[in-house]
Length: 355
Image (cartoon, rainbow, N blue to C red):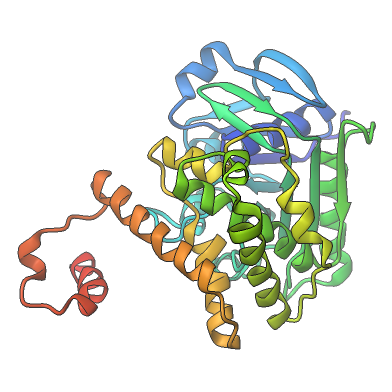
């Protein structure tokens, strides 16, 4: 009798999620289901067109199962051994990540967060205290336009456990190692998985890129290299990156001096748009809080001066507010703010949203 393969659910069908589902499917070690919402009909009809620097090209590709909602994925193909979440993490959006995945989380489910940012693990653990939680950092440079997936970097996954109370270290690491085995290809030139006992340093290293290049390109509407042509490296990118390094140090995470130079030059000559710029161009909400808001709370708590990051954060919050109003997520009626001091406008908006 054949051994049943572990069941893996991928929630998030963007550039990162599609590549994760592809890797898991190609390896043949897991039964893979992916949730595809807006493009569900097109994916079921034509699949994805994939152009990858390491995996090669595929036409009409899809994983073993495709579901239009998390609820249908669970009812039709669950329960799942692993739930891989690759959506944007936007706690100020219409739904939190915890709410999104709840229908597919059972007692047996190991949750794998393959997402950007700092502080994303605490609310997830608070919502699902009995489940093992793993943290993943995927370095791939993948974009999705319609059902066309394009990537420019080798698939690299950094995987680690979170502080999983109630589970032994051996139990948690067995889940880490099992998922690593499911994900990695036999050929290390195709993809690469690195298991870490603690990924805090790796997460802060990626934040050096995301909190600076990703955010500033989103604000300017330009790709990284055009910003650099205008002189951003010396007067904007490097000083802002040093602020991230200083905040990390205040949290006991000492980053190597070379990380700023590495991240600043990682895309030399590629003229690509980082993910946050892509999101804004699509009129989609951005990961403002997990990439800048949470780190700046650490800075305030620890007395770290971060003027560039603070300015970028406030400007992005303004753009996020505009997007929410355009999408109908919030309504700003001028009469609701009459008689109020403008210093009190943010609190007034919160009061109105609670009604």
